[in-house]
Image (tube, rainbow, N blue to C red; front, top):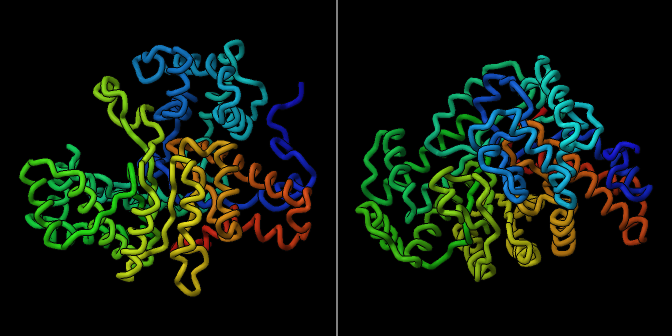
Length: 470
């Protein structure tokens, strides 16, 4: 049997193969959104074994393991790393049809030169071969990043973070820019138990009493300025739904005071607080030429028993079915635009039923002369960074907007070998475009197609974000 991951994997016609191998394959990676650990990068971590690299914190794999009936001991519990790897290997054959099967074998091939299909019969040999390679110097975190041809990494960071590890990285000789991203979710979720600790920490790092809403948002802007000094040029917001309600400025201070006094605020008041704070922050970003990312549509921590046991980000989240999206999304963008506070913005919806809705909304606010694709429809996210999900996003974007200006793929991952997802995306995009060409829907114009492919793979991201890249 030939290699499953071969040179023309997913590339189903000659044009697709040409586009990928000639234009896409060797383009650098601009990873403008991920959850990689800046500490691991600063310390150039070396992994003791493949489990540490591959399974640690990977809730995609954890969900598959649970679905296969694997005991939690072998997922997040106290089983040995070798036992956890064995459990994953035994699960892999059952992931057929899931993107995990493709990702697993792309990563084994690209980073370890392993062509065999991982299963319960060969897991121990794979374990040994991977672990042997991981002891080599060029398999450290920085080695893996450079092996992946990455130029920029933007991590995800709390506004109260001192960014110590980013500062350490900036002092090191490393040809990859590693920059923070401002992620103030805890500061918007006024009804959640994380809000009060966040405000307390914000008071600590700014050395100010935040008795009023005005003082609170001034402190947030102070942290935006701090992040800007450290090289940050992107924010990110994870929202369950797009919050919007009209409000008066005086109302927001009252809502803030209510929450600070330990009382719950109503759903309508919560929407007002979130809308006001998001619009204020959007203005902070616009002033500094940042890009704002908004990821919306997840319903999180649905298994309360397991949340108590394991905490957040453990694989118990899913797609939400927000009742109303179009009106609040348009209203939010319009409110920002009316106040000249709409920065470059990337919108990611987790529920694919909203693809065309989001795609059609963007054109309403592409009003800044000289800025191509100012408002972006972000790549397939989380449950959509699969082949069907990427195809849905690409076709909706092309149908409703301008694919030529798309800023392309990101990893959105905690793993240092998930850069194979960029290859996966590029193969899928090249196959889609190649099929359009061979079906006569696009011209077979090499110069035009090269521009399209190279823009999507890297050039658009390089030009979109205010980050200098060599």
